[in-house]
Length: 339
Length: 272
Image (tube, each protein chain N blue to C red):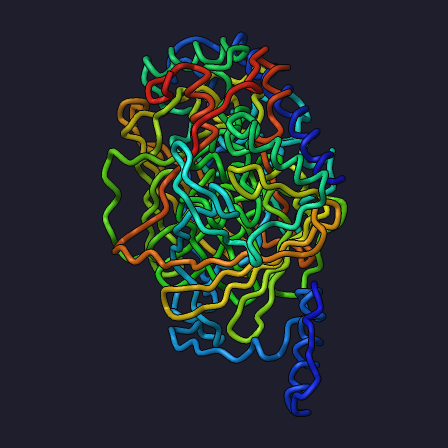
């Protein structure tokens, strides 16, 4: 029963998202990042947190960060990291549908949303003029399935979008000798991260969640992610779940409409802050889309309450009616070959 | 579970005792969670995890024809012939269910949920022609499947089954019986098939899998399937799961849903 409620909640959220995306697209200021509103004073220059916490060790000597986690909501007064405060709608909570319409997940006692960090500090994504134009085209055409947010299509949201709080926000971190494995409750996504220094895969091999290569720097897990799929313009790897009316098109909150190129790569840093908190940083570069690398970081993972059990979120299986409703697209008759 | 016939006439008492024990074990087998103690005896001498269990970490795959048809079948277009994986040969369908299965078979090219890129369910996920990766920890075992990035988390810490929920991949709880990982999966819904031949189940399905490590690279995979709405009795399948030994192997993508959209949008590679 709870699952059905959750699915319903997600559908509502997606509709909200679409409406907001369209609204955001129409009111967004035109022009490149120079034309974006002035940066709010609340964005201090991003400095990486220094953590003195030493996690216990796994049997093979890795810092042990394994376990069940839930997402820490992004700070409510920030909306998402790159949204200037002046442009957000009043009192609009992040992921309101996920935290009010259903009972889970509950943030554990003591976990708190803390300020996010961004670089560049003016809170805009350094899009090239071409990428900005493409983004406006995409946001203006959200009623068409070929432009619709890939997450609404139940395509894998990629990195770092899979770590941005969404309606289904549990994570499970496994560790085994030579590997860290992350299961995302959202759309049963997963990543296997080898730690043995092997090279990335042949560039002809693409994965929706990218190809991950990790190593430990002290107690910090550093992961290089490359080889992302470019199958669709819908594969947007950043963006919050719902767009916010009135925020500029460059901001992460409208988030939507930035297809990456084959050059897209992310460097993630997972920093254990204490026994129950992991700070997340993603440095993003793609010279075909961004004029410079940029970084977003926040306190992302809180250890889940003791009774927390992740549930299956089968996104695609329940999406036919949603797509019909949103884009008048009927996929119910499509069959594909399987081996 | 059929009770074994015990012939006592002219048999020494000791054999009678053995026979009775066997009968008792067979009865307990009807509740697959209560396994005969004899199963704890294992010849496994492969690597072990720090907590002493057979080390199942790694990438595995089933070879064979189970994903086409669990039962014995001759070749048809595009489908190799195969022996039955079902103990006793045939799946013990109730009459109406056998008719339904036969109808499914006739309609399989459109009716198989896999052709809509829906999650494959259990145990079908195991024997799809795709690798899967096991990550083994003392309290949780994660299985990541290459097909449609399906996952399962098997709880070994006593967490009870959830109620009032259906999952495409079921709700899995496990325990170690000696060197055998026993996984009890319920809440599988009624939407998945067992193979491309239309073998199916209802929402009453209970799946008990036994992953018995034979050596470092082989697992004997035995599954008991119980569904009183569809079958006349519980039944079993078994097959070997092979470790993929290629150096630097890793799971790649089979993003089935992407193929649906490629077909819809007539993108290259969609076959349109």
